[in-house]
Structures are given as C-alpha cells and as structure tokens.
Length: 303
Image (cartoon, rainbow, N blue to C red; front, side, top):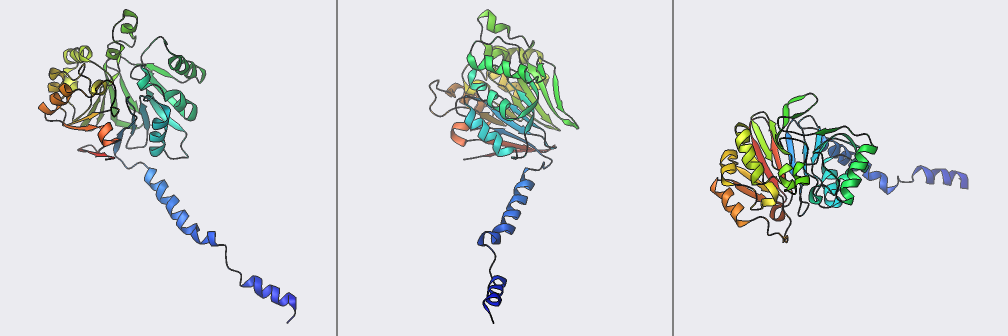
C-alpha cells in the first residue's frame, strides 16, 4: 500500500466537525422559538417594568401589536418589546402616546427608528422639550399616519372585530390644559381595551378631574375587570367614586422603586383595597402580564 492509499483511507475515516453535532439541537431550539412567537388566539398585555413611567405592550389573538407609552428611558422599553416581538419582525401596528410627559415618551423616537409604525394615536400638543420636538419631527419625517384621539373613538385591528380600544377621555384631542396652565395629565388618552366579555381600563396619568368627567359622561363604559391605575398610584387619581364605577378585580400600578414622589400613595392603595382589587406593582412584581380569552383573564408577573 503506497502513501496515496493511506491518505485516502485517512480522509475516509475523518470525523465530522464537532460543531455539526449540535446542528439538530440548534434547529430544534430555533423552531421552538419561532413557535413560541406565533399568535396563540389569546390577548396578551404586558405592563412593562420601566421604572417611574408607563409603557404597555399588547399582542392581539391574531398577532397585531401595539405599544402604549414609551416610558422614561429607551433601554427597558426596547428590551421589553424585543422580548415579545420576534427578531424577524420589523413593524408595530400601533403606537399610542397618552400624553407627552417624558416618563411616557422617552423611548418612542428609538422605537420609531427601529420599527416601521403603521399608525400613531396621540393628542395635539406643542413641543416644550427636546424629546417632544424630536418625536413630532420624526413622525412627520416618516409620514406616519396620526390619529388625534377624542372620546368616542374606537380603534380596532384588521380582521379582529372582537378586539377594540375605546377612547373614554379626553373629550377633545387638543391638549388645551397645556396652554391654560392646567395639568396636562388630565388630557391623557384613557383606553378601554375589550376582548369578548373581558376588559382592561388603561388610565394613563388621568387625574380626578378627568375621572369625574368620565364618571359623568362614560359611566356605562367604566366597569372593567382590570385597571391600570392612573398616574402611578398618585393620590391625585383613583377617586373612590371612580373606583366604585370601575370595580376592578385586579389593579396594576406602573411605578419606579424608591421614587421621589412617594408613589403609590397609601391613600390610593387603601382605596383599591376597599373595592376588593388585588394589587400588582411593577416596582415589586416586575413586568405584569395579563392573558385573556373571550371568557376569562389571568395575570402573571416576573416576581
């Protein structure tokens, strides 16, 4: 046997590269990851743990997506959205800016830079800070369709008539309080998210004046199983009369640990307990997820 024959035999018995042994496992994990991101016929709502601010991400039963508010910083919002949007998806159906305070807005320019946005819902406001001006400039520059929300508007998703976002406040999309020296929190877009027999009331930073107005004009729409509590649990929101109309079984407070405002107020926590609501807080429980089908809802939290 000559050297050429030995070389052929050596090559014939050479083992495959070690990394190739992991290909089936990698393929299986990839398929499982893709399957986990597929719509499951349920509504998912994540109240993201973003610190002292608000950001809520939702995915409909058919897979439509919406981001309501952009928190006080980009990183936790981008990470939260990225957890629930597969890496191959580069669009979000809807962005809602309840009001232009920075603790609800900061991530939106980054979201707009990273994802294609089909529609923005907000109020009309005058930019008084750099991030507000940047946001308005980017929306115009990308020609994103904008809807200025007012009471009675109903936002829906194509092919999903059972999922609706009904605007309960403000009465006009013009943030008039801003120019009158009033509190722009009371121009917050308040949304009632409905799916079949289930509903979640998303209050933004609406305070007692807006709550009283909704109690007067939208009383028949207020009852909801779950309430995302107004203004981070401040004592300026969650009036007893309003809570008695909502009658939430679950209350979720988006709030930062050890914040300088003392949120949530003990007065608000007491009021929620009096109406029998079980309380979740992002500072204590991390991101809180609501899962719903047409007949029931349940809640999961990080901790």
